[in-house]
Structure formats: structure tokens, C-alpha cells
Image 1 (spheres, one colour):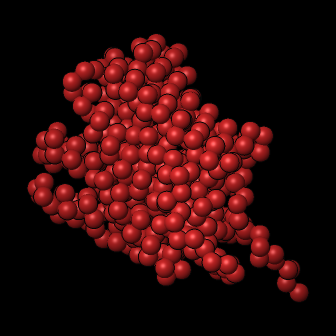
Image 2 (tube, helix red, strand yellow):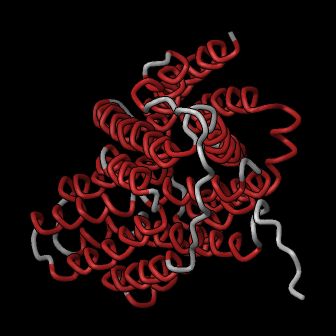
Length: 390
């Protein structure tokens, strides 16, 4: 006789499948994001053209995740949509190998990132449906994305040293094939029947507490543009070696993995509100440390350790908060809105704003302004939680 299986509990096989998908997806991100600019430069693109091409990764997040999330929620076939985006990205990526000029690369990057940018929120929605709010398991699944990222950054850099930067698309294409394979390992949990009418997306977005929450995440991700766009350049200006810069990036990802693994008892003890506000306040501290004290290695190490709070803790607290307003048939769109507003609009705004300070002032001012953005985000989040509790 076969053993009885409690279908309400996440299956071990399902957890492995999600971990495999997250590992593959973030491995692709880790192989592509740090090295694509170098590849475009090697193909004859100037600094301005490289900047525009790389900025499309943020710009497409404004509309891509929301569009695919709408399709996923309205068809109730999120895994199918995830597979379609994975296959589309695999096919579109081949255009990089065929492209010869800026216009061709622009078209490919626009279409490619419109597909890949939707995969994180779609997979998050699937995972949350499977886990039914078990954020201990969520953290331990999400850390596999961080593991994939750090392995790809490290191994990818080594392979490019051996084979040359022109090998970058082939490495990334292989990883996109792995993402496609991983998407076919996923199975969607049947939607639970809804016995009461759910609010619309528009009605949720009119709530002051929701507006304040998204304002907070917009400002937090805008602040992090200083890290993702200028951190390497700033440390190089201060005289740090490439090896040391790489170690600082790796340290940030290592503490991120640690937080995801141990996050459940922290959320139980301190609560979502306190962790969110602490993450935003520590982002202010982190960017001030980088802006005013990065010349001291000890302070730089402290700043990178705070990545556990400013990214991992903030991301998990945001996902948990979203579950209060966007569940059931709204789940994918809620995650898509989070990516579009925060990483799309916020990341693009932060990149353009901080670029002006980089051009007109210096690296120090970039990180001081980022700290102020994070502090403003803390006040917006505090206002949101005050409204939720009123």
C-alpha cells in the first residue's frame, strides 16, 4: 500500500524543483550582468551605447513583469507562462550573436529583458502558493538563487579569463537553456477555490498604505543603484585591486545567503515591521559608510556585511508585506508590480539621478545621496505600517 501524502504540505520534489529553477535563473543573472558591458565594448560599442544597453535591464522591468503577471493570473497558468518566457529568452538571446550594430543590440536587449525580468516575480508567486506562507522554507529556497549567482560570477570570471570576453554569450546561452529545462521541472499547485470576491488591483493601489509601501521600495531600490552601477568604479578610483573588489561583492552575497537561511526565527522574534524599518535605516548607514569611509577597508567590510539587511531582509519583508494585499488570483500581479515599481521605475530613476551626481561631483556624493534616498524610504515605510495598524 502506498503511503498517504498530505497534499497541503509542500512536497520535497516541488521544493527541489523550485531550488533548481532559482539556482539556474540567478546563475544566468550572475553570468550576464557583470560581464555584458565588457562584451558590448568588445563588440565596438562606445561607453554611452553600453550604458544605454545595460540600462534596458531596468527599463524593461517597468512593463515586462506586469504584462506577463497579468497573463499568468488571468489564465491561471503561471508555470506555462514561465516556460514561454524561458523559451522566448533562449531564442531571443541568439540575436546577440547575430547583431552587428547598436540598433540590433538595442532590439535584442529590449526583448530579452522583457522576458527574463518577469521570471523572478512569477517564480516567487509560484513558491508562495506552494509554501502557503511558510517563510522559513521561502528563505531557504531563495538562498539557492544567491548560490547560483555567486558561483556564476566566480566561475564565469575565471572562464572568461581563460577563453576571452567573446565567450560570454555562449556561457549565458547555456545557462538560459538550463533555465528552460528547470521551468519544465516545475508543476503548478492548483489554485484554492475563492469563496469571497477579491478586491481589484486598482482598488488595492488606491489605498494610502499600499502607495506608501511602494514609495518606500521605489526609494530603496533607487538608493541601491549606487551599489549596482557605481560601486566597482568607486572602489577602483580609491585604488582597490580587482581582487579586493571581487571579494567585497562576494562578501555581500555570502551574508545574503546566511540571512535567507536563518530568516524565519528573526521574523518570528522581531516582526516584519521592525525588520523592514531596520533594513532601511541600515541602508542609510551602509551608504554613508561607503561614501565617507570606503578608503578604510574595515569600514568597507562592515558596509558589505550590511547587505544582509539592505537586500535580503528588505526583500523578504517586502514579499511578506505584499501577501497582505495581493493573494490568490492577484498574487502574480502583486509580485509583478513590486518588480515594476521598485526595480523598474526605482532602479531607472536611481540610475539617472545618481549618474548626474557622478558626472558633476564625485563618487562620494553618489553614496551620500543614496543614503538619503534610503532614509526617505524608511519614513515612507513607517507611514505605511502606521496606516496598516490604524
